[in-house]
Length: 495
Image (cartoon, rainbow, N blue to C red):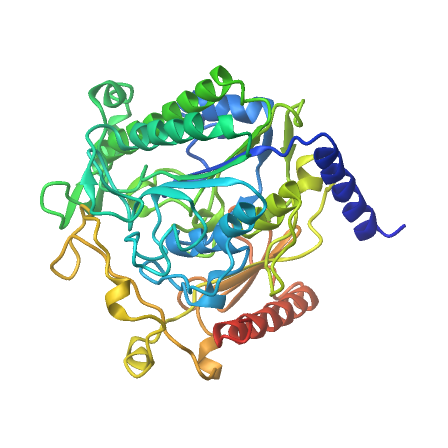
């Protein structure tokens, strides 16, 4: 029997066992905002305290080679659709989904799940009349923000006028999620919740208790100044890295504690055993949070520090023993995996993710497909002559953010029709990972083609392109062919 056929059979039998026992799991996706791979205790960070993520990692599945897109909105689109965000025009933060996209929330809702979204949305406005709001994209209920948020956040409930909530933001959205769970679980329908935290995205803040945990950070970090948003003015300011890290780590610990609160509530309600909790970050670490690192790059780059993120899965009923998976996996994989669990068909359009159930079970040791990353260069001048994909009025945000931009504290979105593709559309930093090897093209200005063996060179310091030209050529062609497929989608040919 061929290996791919065996893998499909294993997954099919796994799903059949779920259906036979009528135990489709509740599913809760949790995601931190700008949370770097190294910023957990279980990944040996010397300062950050994450006891609840550590516990999940010690009893569930650690996906140690898990990736996201280089920035937040693209990653959110990839989770919702199972497709690379360039396929539908989410090139960077501030670009929206297209209404024709099929989301995992819609698929699970059609399969009988009660669905809800809490926290950061950032793939379109959350207001009720938006065609890309959480409600339009498959969520029964939502308490959401157009962008990121801090302490005392402002949210829109089910698309209504935004209201201010007082307290630590991670705890607020977890409390709302717990309330939804309490209200809905008695109906016997399985639950699907997406909880996207605003932490630890800058500008940073924390409770006195959490800040005190990090008061002894080494003074050496005070010598470095970093640029970030001021909580007071919303403008850029430079501050000592040590002061910034104290606040950043306080946010991570508060987020971790809220995850612990959710896990305890699930246990009290008798739901923990058959609830799948999946935590990950949305992109790599920003410059304002970087100290020493074994990885190269930052948020916004296609090197490891821009795309590798922490990821753990807990599901006590089915995951009985701790597993550390080294299989390359990515946020695109969430939709196919969750559809397999729910017993629902995949959308009939190009997907970039695969079903990870064999990896979660320890049955998959190597990924059968490549991982592809691409920072599309959006030509602002060309966009001026392009037709907006949606009415700009429908793309205006309503929930305020701390960061001032273009003179305002809210965010608007855009998406454009792309009637034709030119050679320059293939440009932009991009990379492809095929098991141990990673090819990067123009990842840093002037670097050209780079080839790395991630198994022996996680820091991406030794360019093997000249010594292994056959591998570099093969992977370059694979990447180019994939880009062509993506650009066909961008032109709307999947709808």
